[in-house]
Image 1 (cartoon, rainbow, N blue to C red):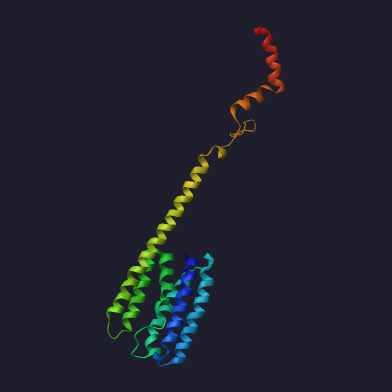
Image 2: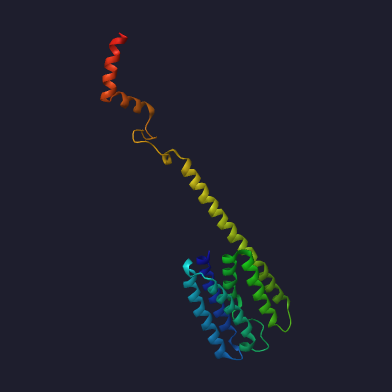
Length: 212
């Protein structure tokens, strides 16, 4: 899931770049805005590479991911001014939120959502209905994604367990002796071949005269 999250990170990054270009007149410090957008772009490229390998998914990486997202939100009033209505990262912070939800399940998703919501509330002079809607979506989005990720992982584990159980019960997986015929060979063919062996033929010849 963290690999699939890389696609979402690229999409929300392009969305943030487009919105900041469209709202370029809202920046009190355009140079700082360009630096922030470049920082978002560089960080996105790094975490996409880092999360692609399980060995690199360390605690410090997820903590740094959340810190960068919260830091950009807190820096938005300094970049755009006190009349700011939308933060510089916008929906870009979803990347860090969902990474925590996937890695640490509902507890991680809830913690990351709380941190992002607190940062959003801290920079608002007043809370509008739109701001409330965004915070509400963040607070329920993290735990819900975490629940879905946990359910998918549990289903994958149960499927692997069922496949191993099926393989252990199949006739082909049971141990056979060197003289036992394959399970796919019909019983008649096996009996016929057994009687055609030299030892069985000689015993039959000794036995047949006595019957007559």
